[in-house]
Every structure is written in structure tokens, then in C-alpha cells.
Length: 450
Picture (cartoon, rainbow, N blue to C red):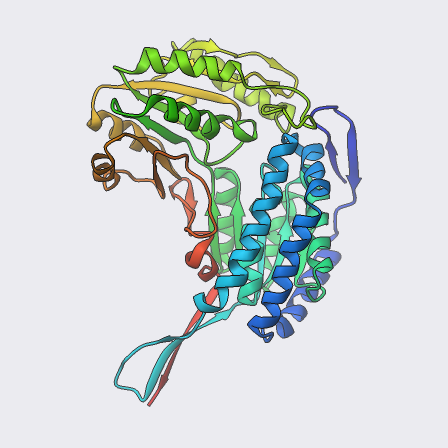
């Protein structure tokens, strides 16, 4: 039985009966049967259906957003924005998938030679709760447009969202079983990966989950893509525009109540700016409205589960015991964790070394550019980094020395359908979105005609 509670009201939302092994296998067989015809559909048909899906998302966005808020506590206004972004990724691949997957002609000694980009079949997506629609749609849109079919194993606390996503696909007119939600627990994932009809797997989640999924996929020689979170740095150089940088840093750390893999979690600031910047940052954080996630003015609400807030509290307390100072916040009430700024953070402290998945920002100073680069790269994660400077050329010169998968200058790290998304080191491998994302689960078939 899969159970979930509303993190704000503690009300029990549902008890869902999980699929048994026979039902799982039948779902996989159904998906494979659907693939045999879906892969032959013309792009024009896929485009029509994907555009229908985008329009359905837009028309139902308030209702869908309420489900997100109910299940994991995301403030309603941010939940609506999430649904709108899902419609955007559908529209992006409606417009671009056909050209992205067009045959590539290669000049050789042959009469004709080219690469054909073809779907591989059933792909399993293991997805997290923090963006319950967006994480799924950035997989769903490119893979259905590519001609693949999808199985979804969603997080246990967002099973209503998972159910609604399958219903949305069906409502848009897609053929039955091209996208199937599997209400199963994590201990059943390996059975799905092992099935011979499942050709690949993508996971967004923890490092522990990533290792388990990647190792199982490797045993069966199946492709995997992993996005395993990060500890992104916000690097504020001494010539940064302070007011603009403050606004961006607050958004980067505290949106979605800090529960984002690409949130700016480590604020690395030039020592000459430290006092002024942190004082202004505290003022801005004090102004963030906390409360009922259903209130359209709420910016910070409860975390998705109480155990997640407890874990953040432990990371904070251990860091304080090692010398970090709480400048604002630091208190927890069940699943609610106050927006918090920890100062005097040093390498070796949990809030520097580990991913902090909640509304806590760790502040560390640096003396020069070399020290800033070293602090960024000292993390085991490598998802993204933001650089803040009024000297764009100087900031660009730093990029080659950074080990992350993405670098944003004077902007927070964010996912965008038009550009690839993914990390390095323990943040995972592979890419989502853009041309790279649609190519991850494709047979790049070489054709040579003498």
C-alpha cells in the first residue's frame, strides 16, 4: 500500500494499492505493443497530439497546480508556473523534434550514406516529488515525439500527480499505453529494468537511488541517464551589481521552498562585499512571506515531508557545532523550516559538503578568483554554477576552469527546453532537453549504400 499525507495539514490524502508483479509485466507488454505502432506514426500526427497536450495543460493548469500544492506543499503560484513550463516543453518539441531527428547525410565513398535516428522502445522514467509535473514532462515530451513510449515510476508522495499525467496524455488523444503510470514502490524498480522489453531508464533523484538504478541497468547492458542533484555555488565577485545579484540569489535559493537540485546552495562571496551583501540579504529573506501554500502570496511554505525538514535541521546543527553562525532562521516546526542563512561556513561542514534540500543558504567568503574557483570545484557535485560580475569577459574567462555541467553569468541556474541540462561528477551523466535530450534514447543507425 502506498500512502501520502498533505505536508501542510497532515491530512491523509490516499492509500493506493501498488501493482503486483503480474500487473507490472502486463503494463510493460502493453507499452511494447503500443510502441510497435507508435514508432510508425508520422511527425505530423505526433505534433498534433503534443500540441493538444500543451493546450490541455494550459486549460487545466489551476486544477493541476492544486494537486501539486496538496501533495508536496509547493506554493500555488509556483505550482501554476510549473504547469505552464510543462506546456512550453511540449510546444518546443512540437516545433523542433522533426528537424532534430532528420537524417544526417554524410559524404563517403558510397553512393549514399547517412545516419538515421530511430526510437528504441520502452523507456522507464524514475521521477522525484519536488517538481512532480516538470520532471516528468521534460522526459515525456521529447521521448514521445521521438517515437519511444514511456513508463513512469513516480515518487510515492505524488501519486495523484502521476495518475493525472497519464490521464492528460490520454485526454490529448495519444494512443492507449504509449505512456503508462506504474504505482509501485522503489523496491520494484529493478524488476522493471530487468524486463527484456524495457530498453533504457532515466532517473532524477538521490545519489543512492542513482547508483542502484545505474548498476541494475549496467547488469543488463541498458542505457541510463542520471540527474542526481547538486550543491550549486552562487559566486559573487567584488564588481557584481549588488542589488540585481541579491534578487537573483534569493530566487535561486528559496523558490520551491529551497527544494530544487539546481538551487544555489552555497553563496561564495568576495570578502570585501561580505558584510554589506549579507546584511541586505537578511532583509530580503525577512520579507519572504511564509504560510499556507494555497495563498497566492505565499513564497515559502512547508517542506514536502517532515523527515526532510528534520534532515536539514541535522545538517544545520552539525555545521553550527563546527563554527557556522545562524544569521536568520534556523527553527523548525514539523515540516516547516524557517528561511535560514548560515554564515562563516567552511569546507568540511555538512552544509558545504552535502546537498541541502530546503530553504537554507550557506555563506562562505573568498579572497581572489583562484580561491573562488577552488571552492566551486571542491564540491563532489557538478550540476551548475552562477557567476555574478559586471565584467562579462572576465567571468567568461573563468568558465573553462569550472567542472560543472552548466555555468550561468548574472543569472540563476535553470532548465530551459532550448538548452541541454545535466551535470558532472556525482550530479550524474547524460543530458535532458534541447537536441541532446531527445537524442539520449535513440538508435543512431548508420546506413551505407554502395
